[in-house]
Image 1 (cartoon, rainbow, N blue to C red):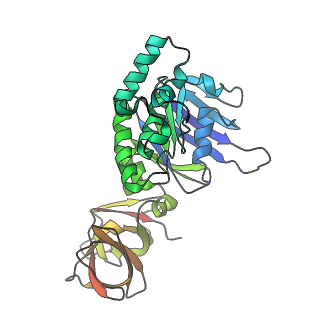
Image 2 (image 1 turned 90 degrees about the vertical axis):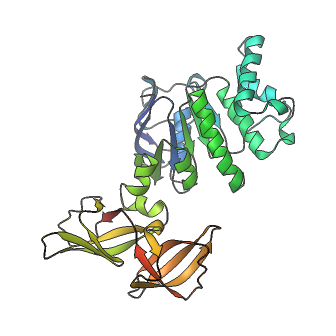
Image 3 (image 1 turned 30 degrees about the vertical axis):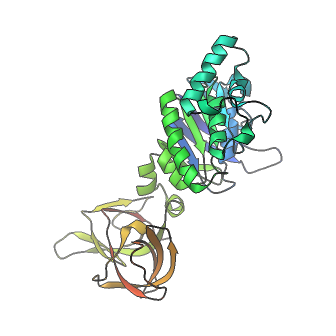
Length: 357
């Protein structure tokens, strides 16, 4: 493994509760990991600990088999061969784009420094503004300068702390794809912190979900979304609700899961989380907005409580006759009104089941 975090703990002086508690994760060479979670969950503290900017109170950080942080010893930040990209870019306003990129190459011969700067300008597509200054650049260009500067010294690990948070949504999406392409071309291993779930899923080979200092799940984006490790992760990721359900035996000897939108066969991919055995009758099923389909011919009807226009679709908040609320993505050419009753049905090839609280 390229990066290994083993049972890491960070506790700030004067605090009894750790800011980071027993976190373990790993990245192979060239992988991009992304950390998401609510504000104050410990994402940035974990990133700072990896960079050597926070002392650890337990566990260990290793990179390429070398211990960087433990309770016994800590390698100084400048000796860790890591690059960092910040939220506010932290560019030097009095230096040109080329000189900003060259800033971390002061120990290299001039010819090699110029060669490396040129390679970085080519990589991030900023040759045309090499002699310009930060104030002359767009937000996206400034972010690419910050990325090029971090990559120039050829770090073994790149850390990015919400680098797109100051950019508009369209630019964020474009830069996220550009960032992934750039890192893949450079063969760089990276760990990225963001609040944006879609950004995390678009970027990450591995996605970690943090809450209250703990890493609740570290997995592929697909697994995090479709196989959440616990109820908290399931509620945090995406748009969905927990609906009461019940297992029932059929006369044919099989079992079905009775949900508010109809029965699901046990032959369907029903993924039970926690310690819920399938023999328990009562449970809760996670129904995401993309599992619920608008169908006027469906026997189940729901009242529209709220709707949010999202361009190609609406996000409807619905209420069934029994009071159960659901969410549904509905194409925007179906412009129903709040208070209207519409037909809905379940369209899913797998569901996740949790114990009844």
